Amino acid sequence: MSTTLITGGKVVNATGTAQADVLIDGERIAAVLAPGSTLLGHDLTASVDTVVNATGKYVIPGGIDAHTHMQMPFGGTEASDTFETGTRAAAWGGTTSIVDFVVQYPDENPLDRYAAWHEKAAGECAIDYGFHQILSDVQDSSLVAMDELVAEGVTSFKLFMAYKGVFLSDDGQILRAFQKGAKNGAMMMMHAENGAVIDVLVNQALDAGNTLPFFHGTSRPWQAEEEATHRAIMLADITGAPLYVVHVSAKQAVQQIAAARDRGMNVFGETCPQYLYLSLEDQLGASSEEWGNFEGAKWVCSTPLRSKHEGHQHYMWQSLRTNDIQMVSTDHCPFCMKGQKDMGIGDFSKIPNGVGSVEHRMDLMYQGVVAEQITLERWVEITSTTPARMFGMYGKKGVIQPGADGDIVVYDPHGHTSIGVNETHHMNMDYSAWEGFEIDGHVDTVLSRGKVIVDGDRYLGAKGDGKYFKRGLSQYLI
Ligand code: DUC
Ligand code: ZN
Ligand code: ZN
Ligand code: ZN
Image 1: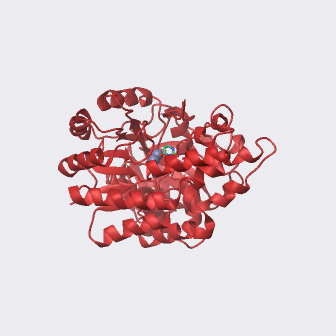
Image 2 (image 1 turned 90 degrees about the vertical axis):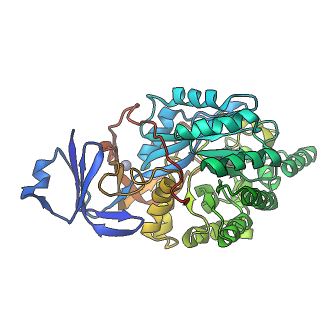
């Protein structure tokens, strides 16, 4: 077992920041020590196998991205990052755990799909991974499977109010799944958009000849998100199930979540970097020599980017500060422009939905600290500590304390990261949704369960380093 000492840095937990050294023994944190401590008279720097000098830098718990779709079959193709490429990119960006979605399509057995996801991920991942389960079109067998999956560490289930024939469950099916969640303690996750309304608006847009990517956004109005969020909350209230609303982009949806929380409900909200930084107007204005005004396809995702004139982005930052929104995941669902997104030239509804950001979440959210939108501790909380607690990983993950896994990032606030295309990102994509973003800050060193996997610009990890994490129930529930 090797030992590592991270010296000279400022250890940042959600609860506070202190100058401290971190001693890692094997895979776990052994001690958090006053700077320069000896142990029983021994100079630690001379006693350990590896010393990481973190002087002038932040030492934070590794990021947890609780919403990814590695190699997900979707929209007639498959998300372009494999478990291997996607988790390696995550590691480069300071994320040391993901929770990915097992997909059950209608008529498939959720347990078979769960086994299939293990097959895809086993031996491939750079960092630890857990699974949520997507349930489509909830059947009796799905309800039985939910108990077995919870026992396997799949303690959260995502349902959809949109994507008819692919994912959509009706309100009765949702109610039944929620009843099960209320009983077995699982977190119920919701893609909250009114699918029937969206389907009509999509067809009307196409009939009118409005085929460009921008019309993806205009045919998914915020009212469809607010309404579905409200409905999901009411169904949770009827059943007593905890509810986690994924990829919230509309301020009105946040207001529904905040109102439910004020009433004492266990309702939680997640947003994603694209809803904090990007707008429908950016998508409308996008064009390039290569793609013309199809360029906007790079940012086709659901929920969609929202209008900046309506103030959603600003509201989302504020909600992160006030805890009306609890955490930030990416909804990493990457597709290349060539051969994937371009299926939607002439018909935006055929553009596979998704943006790839798994590598950039920690950097992008750190810009909120730089811009004084959130505190340093809140940055750690929304990217690591809360995801760990929300999804039953806290204690081992999401905190720097004795006994926790040695998942640690040394972050240099004086460093700089330019986000560009191939040379400067590691995701398996032929473009970047974040191209041109200049980041104040840099991920310097990344440890996964005590092993240094990123050291400056060297990648020292290997596929298979990452192991399945069998999650417990949410630590936010009594
Ligand atoms: N939204 C996306 O953008 N991609 C995957 C699925 C989803 O809900
Ligand atoms: Zn979704
Ligand atoms: Zn998703
Ligand atoms: Zn670097």
